[in-house]
Structure formats: structure tokens, C-alpha cells
Amino acid sequence: DYVVVKMIPDNWLPPRHLHSVHTGKTFAVIKWESPYDSPDQDMLYAVAVKDLVRKTDKIYKVKTQNSTVEYTIKRLEPGGKYHVIVQLGNMSKESSMKINTVPLSAPDALKIITENDHILLFWKSLALKESNFNESRGYEIHMFDSLTNSTAYLGNTTENFFRVSNLKIGHNYSFSVQASCLYSGQMCGEPATLLYDELGTGADSSASKTSRPTDVAAIVVPVLFLLLVTLGIGFVVLYMRHRRLQNSFTAFANSHYSSRLGSAIFSSGDDLGDEDDEAPMITGFSDDVPMVIA
Picture 1 (cartoon, rainbow, N blue to C red):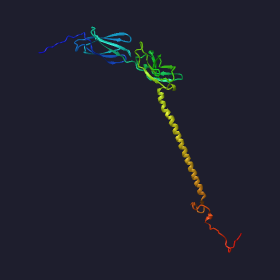
Picture 2 (picture 1 turned 120 degrees about the vertical axis):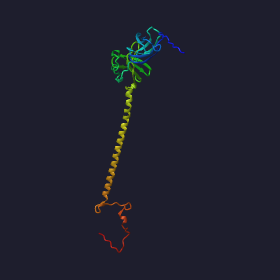
Picture 3 (picture 1 turned 180 degrees about the vertical axis):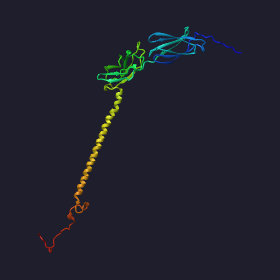
Picture 4 (picture 1 turned 30 degrees about the horizontal axis):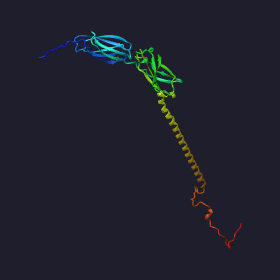
């Protein structure tokens, strides 16, 4: 024996499993399930979107018979904060969640140019890649001093450059540029940050890194040049000595050259000395030998 029991639908239950599927800069995709399985008729939902920054409300109506409902909330603002409430049209129990939209991107190509008594910050316009950004909104610039561990707001500009002066020597600074915040410092863009150090030498971080190979080259090149000069002088000295020895030998050979024999005659050390040593020694004169005096 068995019995079939059909539960009476309770239209006062809240929607189930409300969550966010995807969040962009100007939209959010949310998803939920009906209060009970397999509804047998269309169900009317009320989707209330409360802007927590602007303090405004919007209500959307969704009618469907599906057990799983997916809905896209449009016309949101980048970097906004919202409170979403979903309930049946009869104002039954509700399900709620909070959504933060994606903020505007950071400006690209942030660079620093050093002048005599100030620096200039340059960056690309956000309007080139963000269709939701208007140049009239402008940018705001912040500066962080690592020595004093403090952050300062430098100002706002609608241009793509900003001048910074009165910087202290020996301090390291970090500059950030972002789309201007709206409504009491909220709904800001992502910041682009650049470190500016070695202020005493007037160079930023990128310049200081590229200067080190140049310094090494400035040391190596003169050393190699001195080595080449030293080797060149050594070769010249050796060549001159070789020429001098060759000339001395030639002169010595010419002084001992015999034209009659057609060759040079060199005597050994034993033969050197007085030529009269080989002549017989005259010891005296005999009486019977006449002496002729010329």
C-alpha cells in the first residue's frame, strides 16, 4: 500500500540560493531558485536594487515558471556598491546580497619627467579604453612619502599631466593617479602607481636601474683601453730591441769580414789577446852574429 502526498506550495517562502554569477563595471548577473521545486505556474519576483552610495532604489519585476532564475541587472556604475533584494511579488520573505561592481581601470603609461625645480606626471587618457569615462570627471593625484609614512592628496585635474613641486631632497615618493572619486570619496577608479626615488640625483626608479650598466661600462672601457695601450707599447719596445740587436750583429759581422776569403772570421776566446805572444822570445844576441843597423 502507498499514498501520494502533494505539498501545498508556500508562496511566503523566500527565494533560495541567491548569489552573483558575474559582475562587471556596469552590470551584474545574479541567480536564484524558486521557493519550492517545480512551480506549476508563473511566479512574479520583485528585484530591488539599492545604491548604497547614491542612496537610491530601483525595483525590477521578473516573471517566470523556471525553478532556476538568472537575471542581469544593468545600468550600474563602475566601482559602485549595491544591496540586492529578491522576493516574490506578494512581498513574501526576502533573500538579499551585496554587490560591488568593477571600478574603472588605472591610467596607462604613467611616467615622470624631471625638471629643474619640479617634476611632471604624464599618463594616457582613460577615455581611450573606458567608454564609461568622461574627461570632465577628471583625475585625482595622491602622493605617499615613505620617510614620513604619510599620504597627501595633491589635487584634481582634467588634463593628462600634473605638476608637482616642493619635493624634499632625500625623500622617496610614490605617486598614484586614478579616476576621480564620486560622492564622498567613493566609486573611485583603480590607481596607477609609480615610485620616484633617488631625488637627490634627480632620477626615478627606472632611470636609476638603467644607469648601473652604464657605470660599469664607464669603468670597463678605460681599463681595456689602458691594457691595449700597454700591450702596444710592449710590442714597440720588443721590436726596437730586436732591431738594435740585429743592427749590432750586422756591424760586428761586417767588422770581421774578410774580402779575400769572402766570409767573416771569428776567433775563439783562447785566440784573443796580444798577437806577439806566439812570436819567439828574443833573449839576447850572439857575438858571432853581425847586427845590421839600417
